[in-house]
Length: 537
Image 1 (cartoon, rainbow, N blue to C red):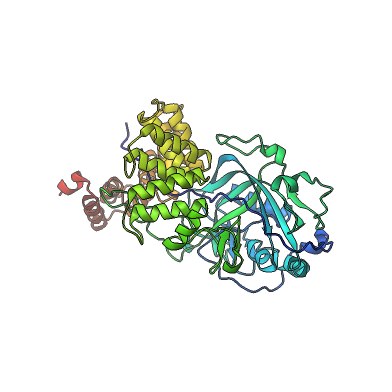
Image 2: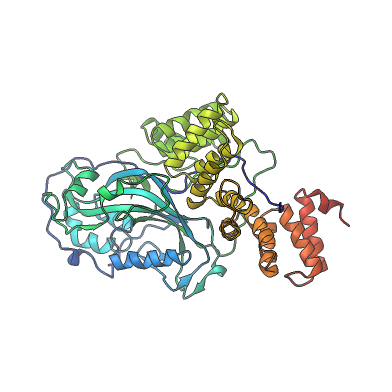
């Protein structure tokens, strides 16, 4: 068997894409909206708008994009990682800018939501392409009881393993590039005007039909996909159902000036460091009821900011699921409060019961470790299952690990591979490592060297050191590619990759011969704990 790092340890990490919670606007004056047509309301150019500073991550809705614009984005995502120019005034796809990478699809249990944009500022912030123009057209009516209603039915996420991209990786016409598309929520949607005083649900808006029979619908409907078609989804599906594959919301991450070295977990750490995903709202705004809102407008519960223990406590008490998970993380990692794993476990459990997949994943990990709660592998597996069905890639990974080891569930290598695939397609580089190893060895799946190599490449692109090391091992027929993979693996902290790189540098195998660099790589391999490198002279 080739040397390989097969990662089956359990990880404590967040969900990839936040699931949107439900919510409707508060009662207001019943004012009939002014009729607007789609051609009046939608346009290529937007008017100047008051700016809200864009943060490192953004999660804008793209339901206002024209069909051909969303089609262009789908093409860009099928040929690499999509790149955009995104600021407080606009969002633009740079179709001629290319970055290496790919996307997988991870299905989730069907999630319906009605998002109501109640004022011009909300429209501008949440719909950065044509929001300013829409706000100018119907802004006055928004202030007198009209809403812009968006009904969504989400069935999955398209996610890349890429968690960072440096400017030097961009290729092509990339002037103005600011962010890359880390992922996207997939499903169906309907957008039309409504009335704040009218109590509606997502099903009501979908059910109004193309004729927009609802009296609240005065803006020609903007829609893509069918709610009935979306109901065919299962979380194990490898692609969305027909007529339910529209791009609804993006997850954007800022392009870095230079590569950032991912932090390595401390040896023998009690917990793998928890990273809570950003909400994606501009600076000074909060995420509530599926949209970014000004703090004064967040009359209902909202997602607390990571580290804000008082607000997280308040929001969790009000039943906001994501806030409960964030508060649990604060107690587990002693961030702003005294460490209390039992409190953390209680909060993760509450978050899970309220519907946050990341809370289920984290609660499952504590159950598997017996930290803050009695150790129970069977219950841990059940929590990982809930997390995975909800779209949490790490939950899928951990469930795969338990099936691989036979912990809490029957040992089943085929099921393990299936869950590693869901994890990989959900954006977890660790899942890609394990699935690649399964294909390389024919464990739980038919042996397939080409698939193994492709999966190790995706893992390496996601900055997983084991993925780069394994990619080097399976690239023996391409010395230059192998050397590049080992070099990246060494940078990311793989002792074996450093050792392999050292040997190639000493021989000039796939890379220019360089004895000094070879010694440096050998030294790093020793520092990272590879005993043979320490013993070598």
